[in-house]
Image 1: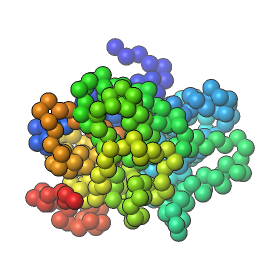
Image 2 (image 1 turned 90 degrees about the horizontal axis):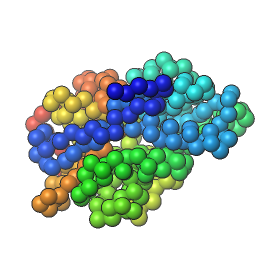
Image 3 (image 1 turned 180 degrees about the vertical axis):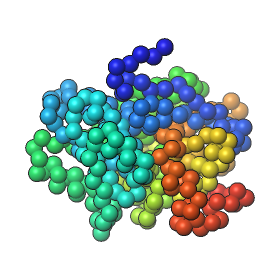
Length: 326
């Protein structure tokens, strides 16, 4: 029995889906969407807010402000509501309607940026707006998930140990790269406790995180237009880039078997399958991928056929079109 007094006190940390019967590869999926915020971002949000409170940077009457594509904004909205803070989320036009509505339902103020920075895109424009807000309001605190070490520490303390406890024989871990907080926290934990395990980052094509060219991306979550300060590439063994049509196919493939996951999860699963096709596991090898969220917030995008067809062409919806490898 779980009895809680605050929404951040609950998270299902030991739920895994065996994907092998669905995808034909030995892959376990760690599900991180079963909490009141609906995503893995609750861990980072809680760690950053707790640390700010301990250090005296966050006080009664403070206003939290953060740039988020959706999930961290929802998590911080939940924490702000539970602890009596005001929260302003700066997002952009790619944020799903569901995420915006959730933040507003929890009492947060949402600023939607529609004009990209000429160099750093929509993320750069969001960050500029955050800096402008903080410069004019001394009670505003920007947690800065992109550079805040407590973001990665949250996963060193929780996600990494949870995975290794469940699978002490772990061979390879697949982690999506957004702010790279989850990636860095898990990678550091494995370096210290299971150095033989490989860490594979999965990123969206069009992201600049690992040095690729910037291109328009429409699915929020993974990928960045500004290289995350948290990233230490020495902790990453390999990188797989995933095209957005392959993300959509992966999501819809899982949904046909009753598993409705978010766009980030579709990207991670697609990347993991691409990598495993090229690097078969040895006998007894164990692969785990992290599913950051569930799919309800993507019903008007990834799971909306007209949206998909308009942006990526109707062939993206065809069941017989394989995901591109390469």
